[in-house]
Length: 192
Image (cartoon, rainbow, N blue to C red; front, top):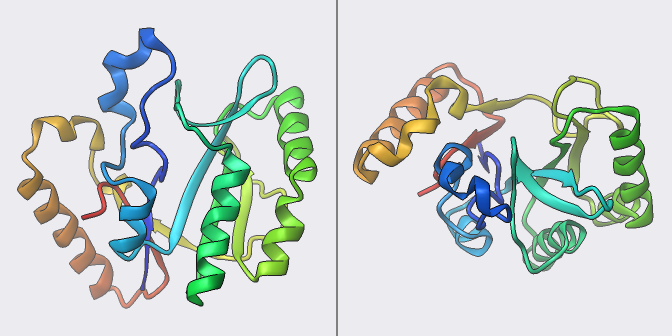
């Protein structure tokens, strides 16, 4: 089974000051990227949003995250770590906003300008690139089915649960998934 992190970059601080009180509802990870890797994560769920000026950023729902690196830099850093450690990695790169014609064009241009697909192909990284609000993939799906355990429960109330309860819940869900015989990618909230 491949361990994945749902909304991988949601540990980052929120950019919009007026949305900071709602961070708990959009946060799916506590560990930074390095610690997620150390915890065994090999599937990364990267959600891309665009500012009004066309700048690509990480986001989740209404929230946009502050990150010192660009999304393309993060994607290639993960790919480079996978190459140097000879670890198999998969990525889901998703347009997190409604796929209007303008946003789709921005996303496609961003992918092309940063040579995302060609570089991931050259590095042997399996990926899925698409839009959040449709099941249509922009490129062929190279990773197949991903089970998102976060959909089994309401993660918005995690801040009311002590970490031990959260870990117990994740283990319970993983036992249920394992019992089905599924051995593909399992994307989880709050990797421990």
